[in-house]
Length: 501
Image (cartoon, rainbow, N blue to C red; front, side, top):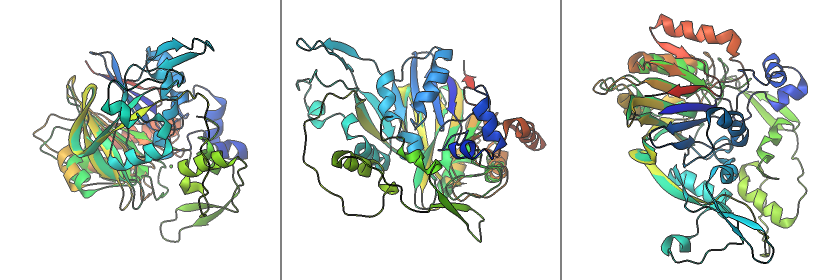
């Protein structure tokens, strides 16, 4: 098994568009000017490769999926994605799904009259997610979803004029492991801001490793914290975890300080930070990034000191009625409250898309993706919201735990991760937004260290790191912080490859 970090930045990525345009951030300016900079960070994402079956599991497919695939896939000889695992339904986790058509196998047919070539997937690509995320995917990408008649009848007529990919939704539940590409993943809930649940995953058991990935998290749920701190299990080898900032507070992401607090008890062998910021497709899917170029008024929370950026006025979007309906459906959280307007159905031309069917998982119930079993692990990603980490790698003699978005561990999750009856976690990839600054939705490094002090993974990698965590300044600092606790903690970088025999 090999795990490749496709992205370890925040939703806005690094360099931040806002920082580059305003010319006021040295980290973002360096990342922008240097194409090989380790400060260049895309949306949090992993590629889990089952080298035994030559199949690939993608964890999250956010806004920057296309860029990460173009940057990294050719270098490592990857041309296809076989199954998708989703941590949650935010833009940085699902808005790249339209581009899955580029990495799904297709069969070509030619229209006898027009001679147009249509690419049709011979089989669906499985998407593993929980029910809530599945509903959002169906809402945002209805054209990608496999039609019910196709599921009910293998004899259903094909439509050669519609060039689409096919995706099969495979729902998972918190803590109920699933398999993807021969690797077992365990999804666990984490809080990603008050009232919102994301998922981390643990995987790698088949490969003798515990790899935990938590990409978007402000707080671990008690159940997840207990799972990750379960002293009866072997230490987490690599924890990749959300760390947006060094110490500054953010309501939906951890900072490094919070990650440190968590890993002080989890004790992964290696902690990698993701969602590191500098500081959460087609003609419409980039709309989420308009926040970077809209005029804002900043206010500061008097208690947490979190900076809130509020638009001065709505930004007008000029489009036809049908396009307006599409935008309203995909981005309701961007809209002013208003009565939705209906529109008459129109005949639409052929559209090249991916087609999906969601596979919903439940916490702790394993699921399979590309013959890899994944165990979903719930964590808190801000009060009231559950995200999931995953453990996988068992088929390859490894325990790989991935927790990308987490602010606090559930007790059940902490107990699981600290279970000394299990072999040590080989790699824990865990959220650490800041070094020690508080964030209500993400851990900081201090919280991560607190958790991994008991989990004791062999190697901990941080994810979700903000731009405040300059690689060149803090990589040695982070390593020394770990060494003081007899822990192996690292700041990874996009493109890092983690191989398991």
